[in-house]
Image 1 (cartoon, rainbow, N blue to C red):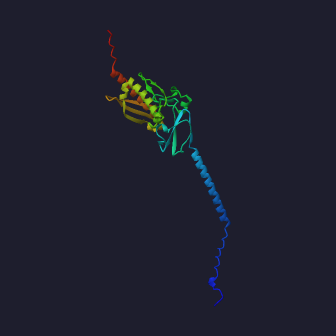
Image 2: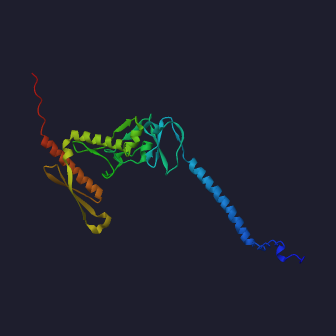
Image 3: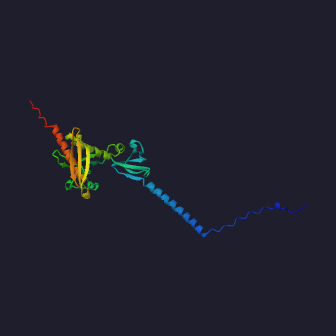
Length: 277
C-alpha cells in the first residue's frame, strides 16, 4: 500500500485575481466631471419643475370670479367651475389656463361705428385727438355719420353693463366683449336706418380706379368711379385726388348724399294731419 497521498486528494489552490489595470489620470478626471455634471443637471431639473408648478398659482380679486380651462374645457360643472376670491392653483399653460371675470364691477364699452380712429393709449388717457384737427377723414379706419343736409358728424355711445352669469359670459360667446361692442354699433346703425330707411337699400355695385399721369409716380392723380343702386335705379359718382382713399371718400359721400336725396324725393311731402272735430 502506497502511503503517499495522491495529487488529486490535495485541495485546489484559489484562482489568482487578475492584475489590476492602472486607471489613466485623464479618464478618472473625466468620470468625476461627468458624475458632478449629472448631479448638477438633476438639481436644475428639480428646480425647473418646482418653478413650473409654482407658476400655476394665481390670485382672484374680491370682485372677480375665475374659471380654469383644461385643454379648453372648464374644470367642474356649472357653479362648481367658478372660483371665488383668494389664492388658487392650476396646472401651468399649456395644460391649464384661467380666465377672470368681474362680477360686481361695471363693464364699459364704447361704440366705434360713428367715431374717428383713436389709439388705445388715447382712450386710456382720455385725450383723443379732435376730429377738427384732421386734414381729411380716412374711411378705412374713421367712423362717421351724414346728416340730412349732407354734413359729416361723429357720434359715439357708451354702454355700461354688469355680468350676472360669468359662465355664460365666458362660454356663451367666442368673445363676449366684442359681441357687446358689435351689438352697440348695430343699434346705432339701426337708429340711423329707422330715421333714413332708404339708406338700408343702397348698395355698392361697382368700384373702379384709374391712375392719371402715371409717369408722375406717387404724385399721379387718382380717379375713382363708384356705382351704387337702391334696387330701383343705379347712379354713379366720381372722386379725384392724389390720394386714393381721399378720392374714394369723395365718391362715396357724393353717392350717399344723392341716395338720401332720392329717398326724400320718393317719400314726398308729409301728409297734413287730420283736423279735429
